Length: 345
Image: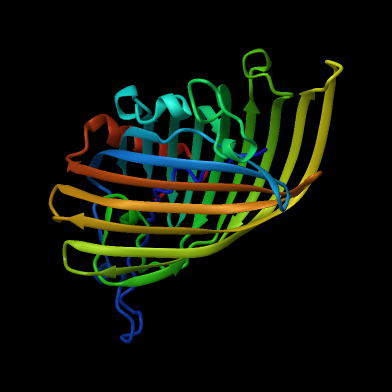
């Protein structure tokens, strides 16, 4: 069983101004993108996360595991080529249907770097608390809930993403942030490579299921086509769609009926698709805000499973402010860029 969160999708791009010798039949990049990356950005957002793991054994038998609806509160900063975000799920935002589906919690920490039109990000996430979404298919009921709950099930994963923007006139930073603004409509393709390692662990004594720990290593290639339509100087709408494919290396350590450890290994070719959309607002001075939605579905055949399928959806409302950068931030990033073997700007 694997998990992949299409987590941390906030993308920034740095492009150099075109040479004045460029052909007159093409507009310079400055007419397509307004850059605010020399200002210090403080951003906060509320997000809703949904995920499902579908284990399809045959046409008539499948298990659907999911956490309860997870609403997160997040805080992040970005300046020049660096961004940092922290996300958690407070209890007052996650009390809906807890008696039915149990309590689910999520914690996430992410940071990223801009390297001209390349973007490199890292994400560390933990999700705890799941329930059997299709309990009714098996007539499984507990006295206190219509769903079988697994409060101790935990998914922890680390992922890294390397993405490239093929069109310097398109601002990926404008999709869900304020360091750049798309001034004129444009489109691009964003070829990306994502590497992720997962650990799915349950407590045998409290949950009472045989599976104990599952490890997974995913290597995926995504290539979404994304376009932004500038509605007005302050509003822009974006939409993207594209395929994903890769390979999953799977290992499961479980306890069999004889209370002995059993190890199952496998490798599967994964295929699926990803969708994203965004609506952004910028007043071109200090304040910016917007909405963003992302969805991903992918899976593969594995061992005795007809298909292991993962589904993820993410919706966020965000707002932010542009401030004069503090002195320590400028000095720190100047030093980091100076000593780094890869120049970010």
